[in-house]
Length: 404
Ligand code: NDP
Image (tube, rainbow, N blue to C red; front, side):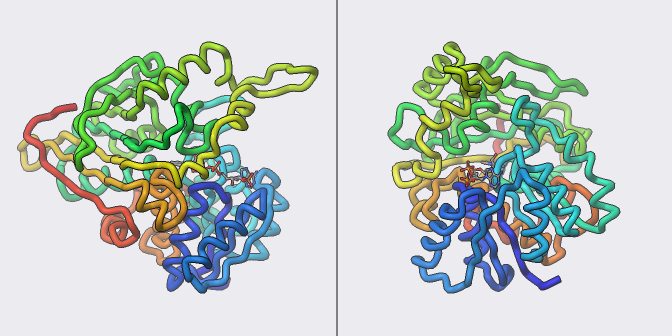
């Protein structure tokens, strides 16, 4: 197999950043191929990369990643060391199947979802563990920011800061403003499915369910972001983190939303526009949420309009040497800086950077193994050392009071 060869699937906002980061690190990624359903989207990204002066040749291809044989043929032709899947969660299993057929490592940033039912669970992908093991290849799941960097932060905290983690709160703030009354920062279908689902948190060995967006707190974010409303959601990394750190007594996930966003979402839900089952419209089957996606601004177009910052991190309470402590580790990312560098806003940036760095960890065998893994199963140190240089710095504090 030719060395240092990467195939990226998906030419959306995250794909754009991933290709930019691979091009910036072409000492590692010698040959880059970007494939998506629409080849012109790949070509646009590559033209923007060349316009920034990067000289590395980047091949572009059209592929339907729902079709295993078509994708397997492309993988065999490209012969990558790793396939980075930044298409949609619907394609996770077909891309994993194609990687198995071609004998190539796999990486993604979101758990598999069936188009008809939102489940937010890793089981369908964890079920591939033995197949990947038998083939001597690695599947790295959830290597974006959350899931992804938040899992690495947790592993880092458990390795260096705590003997035992008692509580973990993952807090995701987007304090950016794109000027639209309602738009989603990544794929609207995936985003709205996630937010309109019931909330869930883990406490003392059990999962507890809450009504969608019914649990709210105020959190004071660093770096002049200030106080924001945060809402309890279910998020997939909690499933893998509880599996790998069963000592954790309580785990929750929080996300910020503004009033305008929530008001629009409530109305859309009330009129049935967020439904994911099909309805008949003038003799045709349509899925309301897919139709809504066509009406909403393309997330990839938000970059040039978005100002402000994101702040995503882990608030952890635990014990070290018998003493209790609080620890807050987080990244702050500026939408406008991300756009200047890559032409994408910070949500895509904070996902695409760890995807590319995770691929580097696999190619360089700093993270190695056969089977299906979540990122917290590997040594966090090389990733934490490099991610600052790759564009996502991190900060840590040891707050006296537990304010979450
Ligand atoms: P977009 O919708 O902007 O882009 C998705 C891309 O995938 C599109 O270019 C689309 O191609 C392509 N695609 C869709 N279906 C197929 C298919 N069958 N075959 C080939 N290509 C296909 O999404 P984002 O870039 O915003 O998100 C990408 C992924 O990142 C998603 O899975 C999302 O859930 C995940 N994500 C993860 C985060 C994290 O922190 N872990 C945060 C944000 C996102 P085309 O346009 O040509 O149709």
